[in-house]
Image 1 (spheres, rainbow, N blue to C red):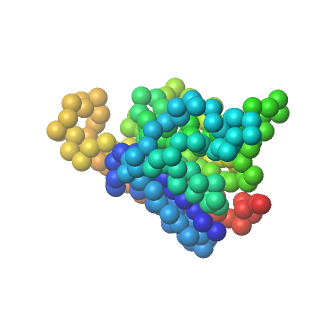
Image 2 (cartoon, rainbow, N blue to C red):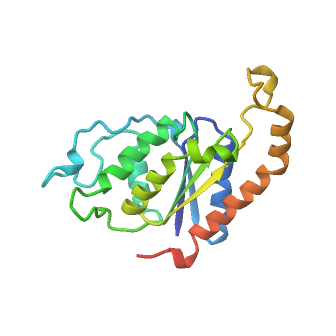
Length: 217
């Protein structure tokens, strides 16, 4: 069994990074081999609307035709047994890098047929981990993108789980930035007391996604 996590945050070692690594720890407890990919280390772009993945009789039907730093990652995702995609919420959506990945991962696998069936031959369990600076009450308004993403992913890839981690700490020193709408001490306390519990939830998610009964041909 192999589990792959992709960090869609441009920041290494921060909230999304740590949550994904915790999820992989949980997967490893089930005996999975794990791999962590930092998306912003790669040189790539989003979908260019060439429709090569739709061309009848084409060599790239059902696969992205662009060849760049993302190409081997897309191939890896289709051969792994569990997928963890993580992103902070920027402007009420995933990061630009994660959006580019999703365009080139989900769209080629969706057949333009009346049944809306997927092209990819395997069903792979996938989990999204979304972190956000705002509070839990903001998820309903700023996290509305996740409903459509859940629907499309489940159609094209496989069963989906979404984990939200709100009210994360953005800075090591809030005094260096214009941020008076946030309580720096409250953020620090939450980082020390609540965030470790969120990492535990991520580990539980990793174990759950790689449980033997989730692995189907």
